[in-house]
Image 1 (tube, rainbow, N blue to C red):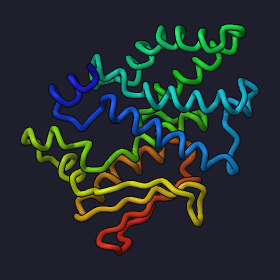
Image 2 (image 1 turned 135 degrees about the vertical axis):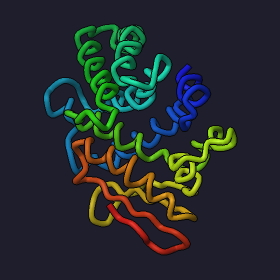
Image 3 (image 1 turned 90 degrees about the vertical axis):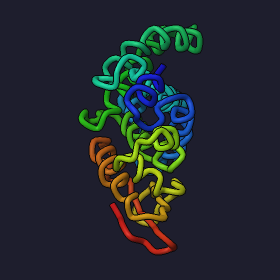
Length: 221
């Protein structure tokens, strides 16, 4: 339903299962790259251990756009509401011998959903990881459906300009997001989507972004 509202009715880029899987993979990669640089907030605050923190990132990334099934406006709030019962079922099954831990992990996952919008500051490393990861799904395939349906605004055109995004260990910072494009229109995605996500993530000082076109670096964040 998220794509019914986002893509079919609003003409937005993909916010469905494919996007969720991409973001989940990217979030886990970012989380891994940050291992030696920063302690997960849930671990630092004595809520759970490192593997539980990875689960928080995975669930938060996979569910972060579920609120779009109701409406794009305030989707981060409706997403937290929709995910609540699902998380009860999933986490009580995983932590069947420790319902208190299940509740604490659930709270952390819901925080990642609520703060995934760039207007809301992330208060945990895990939420920041999910938010940054959300800003990395900007390659052309994500805008294919709205673009082929005739939508040619800057969001669709700039996404079409981006060929590939990779996440690797950086030279200056732990995480390097490398964007490869064939048209400078892709800069819009970096500045207006990825950049805003990084600024609200709380882990911006640990992430660098480079954009290249035809083998030449044209933009850094």
